[in-house]
Length: 324
Picture 1 (spheres, helix red, strand yellow):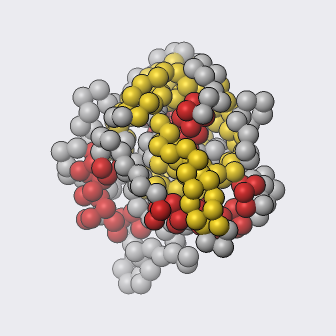
Picture 2: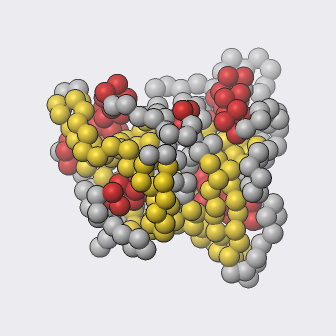
Picture 3: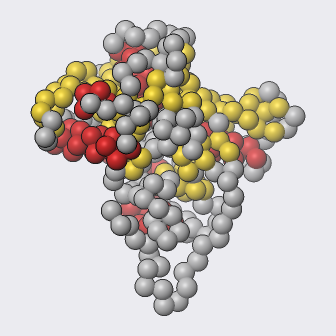
């Protein structure tokens, strides 16, 4: 599938059972013992450096309909909004959750927590999806990092199931909609490298969630009058084609903290492929010591095909490779 242009490769058969009492235990086990399968599915020659995958696993949350691990070119993320949108529709299409009109609720356990998705159903067919985020918050506002060859750069850091540094592309003389993608990636990656070494991040409930996942370059607008363009560069310089669902969540949490949005106001965000996600702060909450919000994020996923992958005996590149 793809959501807003961003790939979602869903494992439907052939993956071994992943042990673990909790979903974070399963994530750790996959990283330590099954990473060859991630490389096999994500990287060339079967995938590419910007491929994204979902591995369904057995949930341990009592309210969950299903649970997932997310994977990419570098490892296993804690949250993924675009994949959540795709998985919610897929779960209804596959009959894992019984379709109900006009809206079917799918409860998806992600490494960051339980995410509740609402799938629009018309004449028995699933359509657009909105999901309620885990508690999202502004971790840092107007923090300064020293970026190589640039100097001091102010960034906000938001948590939307994963931590993102947020900074206007104009700070680097770039435009999200018009600058070369390579230039955007280089700038975002420089911020990520600087922020990882210079900023301290922690999650108050789960230490494994406390790391910077990537950087989002924005066009400097809020998404009130027209979609705010942004590009998310995460993992190992991986480029999100969609507006980034967990990134929309993080951006909305930061906007709420800065007074740029109030409860019930919707904002729209666009990605490099031109697709648009919506975001709306629907509830105030708390995450540890942080004032937090629940964000309702909306988008649409579509099918692209099905594939069966195998290893041929004697193939020296069977395990996957990257040219980066």
